[in-house]
Amino acid sequence: MRSKNNQNPIIRLYLNLIEERRLLFFAFLSSIINKILDLAPPVIIGLAVDIVVKEQNSWIAGFGIKEVPAQLIFLAFASGIVWSGESSFEYLYSILWRNLAQLSQHKLRIKAYEHIQELDMDFFENDNTGRLLSILNDDINQLERFLDQGANQIIQLFITVLIIGGTMIFVAPKIALFAFFPIPIIFLGSIKFQRKLAPKYRDVRNKAGLLASRLNNNLSGILTIKSFTKEKWELNRLNKESLDYQRSNKDAIKLSSAFIPLIRFAILFAFIAILLIGGFQTWNKTLDVGTYSFLVFITQRLLWPLTTLGHVLDDFQRSMASIDRVIDLIDTPIKIKDGKIKIEPKDIKGEIIFNNVNFNYPGRDLTLKKHKFQN
Image (cartoon, rainbow, N blue to C red; front, side):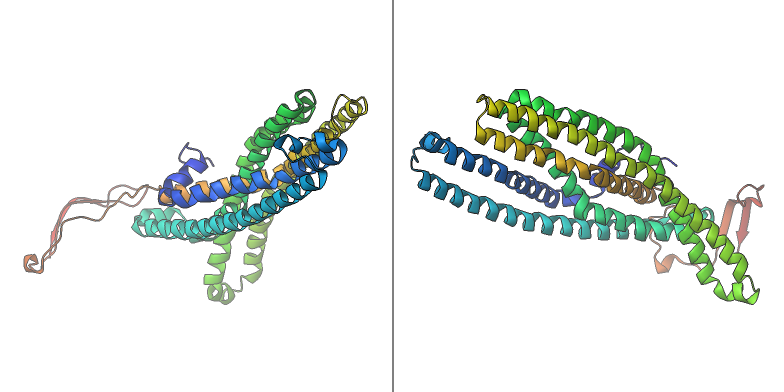
């Protein structure tokens, strides 16, 4: 089942939460600043090694701080500022993303329910309560979890690749090529997996709706079930719905789980290349010890977060499927709209007139045709 709208789910979500764009901006900015400060420790380690190896000829000495103790004190002071800033912005982005998650789930739930109340009776004839409950609860809760954690993870992963990649090109462009080698493979693989996962998670959400519908119908009609001694029959029907949901999840899990080992092998190749090539260059005195230390640490910071890409992608696809279901419901057209003409009490004459009324049940011939009736 494809979305009724061909727009990207993220764009659809943003358009429905346009009033929260300021909160979104500051949450986004806090995540970026936090990640920039979080990537500073490998730089500090490289500078510390550079100080003890080169002493008065270190990189920091170029700023006029010649004595080694003074350089180390300066580096310790800078470390304190970096750690304090990183912790402060981690607290800030956590508060902002969680508030955005709570605000968004509340707004979309109310907006969806308000729209449901405006829909005509024909909609409820062709839909079921369980599916609607699944959307209003499970799907909106899935969106909340994505905004609470997943959005920040995606932003910080992108910033990590961008900043560390740029730094490595500046410091050691030839070695940086080996660190970058697995990144296109990982991202191209992510896109391929994403395309395969999307329909599977749409099917998972649909199966969840059917299961919720079965549970709702059975619990609301439990007196009838017991009166006709149909407990075993209904249990078998519920068992079938639950197994369908389990199988749907199993297919999605099998595909998403295969992605992580592939990422690890690509990362292993890059890390070994940096370790060996950088090590040989340092041994041959063509690369500084401080720079080599920095490269080893920064490569780990660049590549290791990519191992979480499988989990992030999994949560992202689940959320996108849920967002589409929620907004598809909100976008369901209202066929019969309330009139805008206000009737004053003095205009009421105490009679009802039907004129040119046509009526038929779905799929049947007209029961009433240009009917006129006055009471």
